[in-house]
Length: 514
Image (cartoon, rainbow, N blue to C red; front, side, top):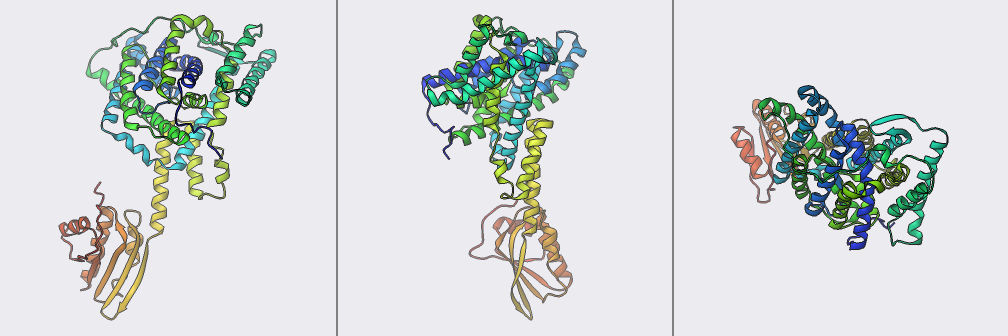
């Protein structure tokens, strides 16, 4: 089946139109995330503009959209509340801005140290769980749009005609997005759907609009130095939050880079993205922005609409600042239903429906990892889910590797016995390795050949030392063959009495010391 996302080269028209679509979808979310964090709506809009502009122009993944993010807003809630207690009304925003600047500095350092490469250690089942969990999170978040909203005040669920109108407009939006590409691809179907539904509502249909959340009208963001005490106590307060925010933002951004790489069959630069994201957040903090990271929903809207180059993100950022400066009266009239319908299409496109096909075919451990990561993403957040998934995958790998250590007897004479080891000798397999030998029943000389094996860590080396000592106490000698120079050197440094035979075809690898 042809991948619908594969389109390695974009063009200016597609990038500009998709950027406009993304900008419209960013507005309600930026406002909502600011409300979640407990700061003014324009703080979210400024962050969306600044982060999107800088990452789209200089970032490591063209076509990816970064802006104010819900995953960060959730972490900011406690920071804002405690900042208010520390400094009184208004101080919470200043502490948040200082934290965003520090968060950006941490991300910049991580990218400069090229630590983004560790995202490659994330197994595919974790990636599938991450995507599925994110799709569920986006899906659940849309239900909040089916409540009465007046600014930050969220009322009861819509009922009666208001509910049916909302459902009808959402359904019509989804139908337009699905069927319009079969007629024409001149304009992105998501943008066309938003414009059509907005026209329908302006013709006389009564439903909630972006203006019911908050007007996006405002001025151009100006430089602002966070007004917080520059003391050790302040750093002690904001640093833990900055570290958590930096980790959440980087993990979500790097995972999104990897996802877009797979969808478009191109390759982004994770470390560059980390550096640029850090710089963008530092700038946002100095211009009254709440910071941000990659948004997978808006990124998929961009890709689905044909956006592939840097122009798409740049266009989205320029549209956002134009909305703030001059376009607020028009943007305020966009129906919430149209944007909700767009996000529901994103959910359908994001979810890995192939997951259901893996049941009964893929290893049960992989299915378990997918389920765990999906669940943790929904209940907690993306960063914790990825970390849990990597840990569980590592434990599963260790368990499987420990069960696959094989020791075969290849030669048996009165004074000499040969064993061949297959598998990895490391902390997870040393117990089974030790239990497979019988020093009391073996002859005077025992040879263990590691041609088909590897000693991976210090636990494996220690297991060899202990085994050699068991033979020595019985007056017997343990001979080891086909060890790497690194293994031989470390065993000799330990002062063991094991006899190590140097062979012409010895392998070359190093042993993990940490």
